Image (cartoon, rainbow, N blue to C red; front, side, top):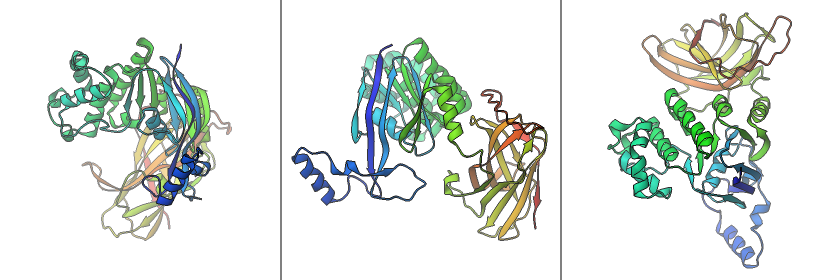
Length: 425
């Protein structure tokens, strides 16, 4: 198969804390160097793209020296942690932004689905936006019309197709946007994490469509997702980005293994909850401040025990509950749990959480935690604080032997584990 996309020495530099290129003096300095036929002097400087570190200068390399190629009909998975540079790379490949250095060589049209509503005009109807999007992709009106019924049917938004898009939910917008991008037959389809907005039925439908595009029609797909199950089932090869640089490339199973092993979630026995663990805005009337494992080894069929430190920021009279989700290291939610209600009657409170009927297989896992108030039975729950990837743990057999049993398709998050909460003195 021929190479349809090639990236050579792609780098992208940004100035921290400033919109645009920076100060007037920097612009004049760039102009003076350009006039003399010299390169931009500020491309020689710039820090590593590590969001957890304090900035050492005014410039940062969001991407640095990225090289890869994609063949026709191949599905390439691009994975990495938040802030690794995945979305920046896709924007460069889609020509939304230009690289600071390097070149992109492509053959054929590129259709991109980077953010919810990208390329859609909120005042236009769904039908009108299909024609607008198709025109942007270089399609004629007759070509779009021939695919119109198929696009509308796939999106599942027929009732609202003549309603302005501004009245669509985010999931409906993604459905229509993906339907347009997939059915207008681009040679290269670029998809960011936006499919996560859709429901399970649509995600399955979208992945099936992408498989059909690549295998049956020979189209090329670039796919970014944090769902390792979807990446493994869909992609042939993968690229792992870390701090704006490629750290692994090759067979998708190998790249996923590198990504999971580079994560330090499992090795942590204690986590101080910082804003890096919080991806949603919550009131934080009560705040999760620390989670730690009580047991060194968690044996199969024995209860799990964790200690959680809570901080009271605003006095509340009603009871609260701790809820959580257990995931395996393939990022697949296995099950959930919730505690009995208890009162937060101190500024700082320590509680012990026990999960005693988990029936987890031997392997590695991590947990999300939430602290909430409200009526659980009535579904009237307000999340006060939420911590993603708060703690990792391993399940061993009786002889403490480690066994990596990664079953990619076994578990779906429909199990409720029994748990108990004990307020510590």
